[in-house]
Length: 164
Image 1 (tube, rainbow, N blue to C red):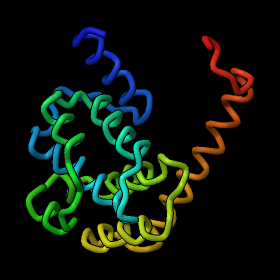
Image 2: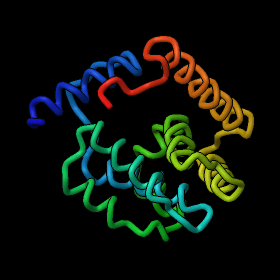
Image 3: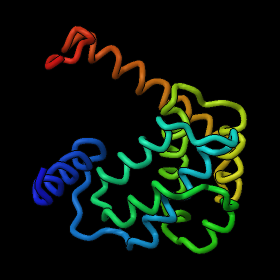
């Protein structure tokens, strides 16, 4: 896919998913810190599974992030304290609830959102001033989204990938 097609795909996805259009984007440094925060949460259980890292890298690619940022995220060991990442990145603070949403999605990418990952997400949410109730609501929305996606796929495509 060409860079132009990637840009079109990314902008279409954001508009379809969230209803947003935009002309500018966050800095590479803020973008990498955002990805690092996601990866630190996925490593709440001391392991970043292949599925979790692939989710974060896919997230980055869909957000038009440069290859240098994606490569840095691929190599990142996620041994930092989430508080350190947050202290140097205003975008992580500004995107509070979205950060929690995407962290839970990334942690769930390997079909397991375990207690250690939940604790990492809650540590981050606590540092951001997000209540336990909001975290639980976001978790519930993610569960409902999964059920709705499964229902839609079963109805529209009989639950199968058409080109396989």
